[in-house]
Structures are given as C-alpha cells and as structure tokens.
Image (cartoon, rainbow, N blue to C red; front, side, top):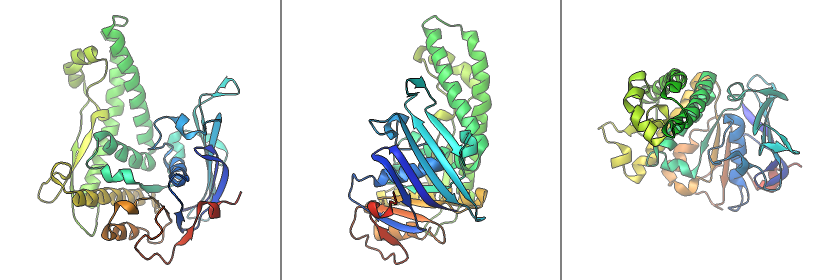
Length: 353
C-alpha cells in the first residue's frame, strides 16, 4: 500500500493543489510553508480525524465554506482506491450541511467503514511528549491506533462519547432542577455497554505492547490505569457528578504507564532520553500492531521530527521503513544522516496542478 496522489481544495493554506508521491521522499521547505498541513491531510484520510485541529473549522481555508482532501491509494493487490474527506462549517450556500463526510470511490461511507483504507503512522514533534504529557494525549494515541484496526472500536467509542455528552447535559439539568435523576438510567446503560467495549480493546492493545512488541533497544511493561464504569461506580459518584455537572468515571478518564524492566515509571523517573526511547517503543508497537491486524505496512509520516532527535534516535526511526512508503518533511538543510534512496523535493516540485 502507498499513497500515489493527494489533492487539497481550500484546506488550511492550500487553495487548490495536487501532489504526487514516490515511495521514499523528503520534502524540504521553510517553516510555515504548509509541510505539516500536507501530512495532516494524509493522516485525515487514514484516521478520519486530525490530532492538530481542535475544531473542523480550523482545517477550512478562512474564506471558504467547504474544504476537501482527496487521495488515491495504490493497494497491495494492484487496485486503486480513491478516498475523500469533505469538510464544512455546518452551512453551505445558506443551507445546513454535515461538517464532515467520508467517501470511498465517490460513495458516502460511515467513519467506521472509511478508516483503514489508508494506514499511516505519524511521528510529529508533539509525540515526544506522549509519555511526559497529559493522559488525554495517551488516550488519543490508543484511540487512533485502535480506530484504524477495528471498526467496532470506532462505533463503540463514538457511541460512548455521544452518550457522555448527553449524560453530562442531563447531570447539569438535574442540578438546576430541570430534569429527574431517574432519566439517567437509559444513558447509564449505554455508557456502561460501550465503555466496556472500549476498555476491552484498550486492555488487549496494551497487553500486546507489553508481551509481543520487539524492539532492539529495550523492553517495557505497560500498566493500564483504567477508570471502570459500572452501576456501582456510577451510584457511588452520583451526588458528586450532579454537583459538578459531568461524569467522573469511565474510559474518558483512562491512562497508562510505561514501565522499565526494573519497574521505573518513565513519566515520573525517566530521563528525557529514556522517555524518547519509550515514545519510539509506543510508536513501533503501534506499527507492529497495525501490520499484524491489517496485513499491510503503514505509511510512515515524519513531520519535522529530526530536529528533536539525536543521530541514534534518527537511525532507529529510519530503520522502520523497510520496503514501505515513508514521507519526511524538514526545514533542515542537512539531516546529518545519509538517505541515498530518498528523493529530495520542495513542495512546489511535488505539485502537478
């Protein structure tokens, strides 16, 4: 599998631009020229979401109503698939419109059916804070990997998040005296049902990382810090939740710890270098997991990460490429490492329209 072509319309800083990609390419361009936006668009086709954008509107060019990202994927069997994501602000030509639509070969699909047609693994500067950063960052890491590998996970997580939003609104209404506690029953059942599915997939994935992932530099144990949602837990926290207006337990509070062989928590006790190796372990593990589940090699996207890494860590990342596709963006004139098999281009050289 590899990405052959990409077309962007009113996406971020791109008005209308198309690109062709070889299997190994380094895109060299100044900061602020749109390199990260390009890789974000590719990731959008793979996962259906953006890690960078807080809102869909951020991905739409400021003077446009609609943005589109269209990619042509060459599959392992020699066939081609066209993937499209259409983004709006909710209104087009004065009429309501869905904010996000997914199309496969021009046919509208749900997100759970859309994802996994293109499989990628992104390495971005922010990933270096995966271990030391917030638990939300670590949950996003799990969600992105599991969503690509398992349509059921996409459905369960989406249902859980929608239920959580409605339950929180109801808790707020109960506090204000506009609703009754008995109205929680339906949403509690949905929260428990979908939360259990999310928990099961996360638990299995983190176990896989601990037991199956092979890396050359170290071995880690992953401890799942799960926030259990159950009738007993919801009853225990009910009064506090009503007072606060939001749900206190469930997968939206989950976390995990990366432990060394001597039971050292990398977040608390790891040096910066040890934490970076831990991040490489998590990313490598995600790649191995996706390859194992989907039987394809993820396309590796390196978004200006070499400035964050020393030569040893750069070599570790580059060793992941093998025969798959790798797209590197950088503003550096010299990466400090030989890459003879890569084509070096500027953004303008990739464009064909």
